[in-house]
Length: 344
Image 1 (tube, helix red, strand yellow):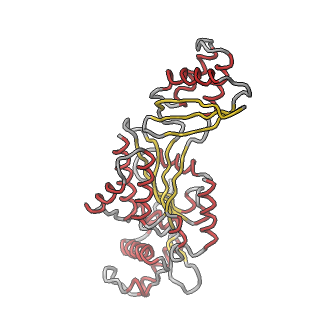
Image 2: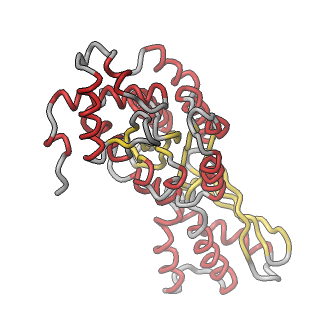
């Protein structure tokens, strides 16, 4: 079990560390002993502060970006601050009303788009909203011929969302087969997700209980396998431009890498899957997550739920490691609560 570094330092050193991190999060600049010595809540000399900062550096909580500069918190130091010292603020009534007014009770796609826009605006960071696709309960499915060897699967979900996906079929598939396959699946999928119903449908076909001809059985088998195995998540990203702020990211190459990650959705599923485990807000600082680790970013996420309280997606914000965690955390948390409420 990893020991807490604060076990080895006194209360005064903790106070100095806390004020140094808070000052850094406000300014984004290295913090020197002279700056902290002017803080009356600390009440010690610059020399004493320098000695404490040296000890905190030896503990791996601070680092100096270059010689004679002030100190910055390391990723380990930020994690310790967030977990042990930070006081998370609460939203004002006006802020709550602003979120509720922006995230309107509309169809699910509009709710999520509004949530992404509001998150980015309130936090001045980029926002991420991820929702499950194939695993949501279905209301109806229909197949439409597109031409030789292709058909369009129209999926209508219980939450009102509609998705169109192209699937492969045999070159000479009759239109009646598409209708029969749709009728068969609708009788078994209503209110269930493709992944939930997949095993039962395939078992029924294998046992010849489906009362389908060979061509239709193949279409159902291949279609269900292809649709259920398709893209599981849909990702909404808003506010990319906020990441270009030079005061937030000094290294433009890191911003480019971050954009590449977002465009390719590299490791996004892994990150969001981790965020869906358990409940409440989760914070990933820098290299704690494979996603965005090279770009020196932090991600704050919270899951949202459907009417059965099942976690169906995750929303959050991404920005530099000097995010205002105390302010952003309650915004992300309450936005997830509002989205969950509307999905009911």
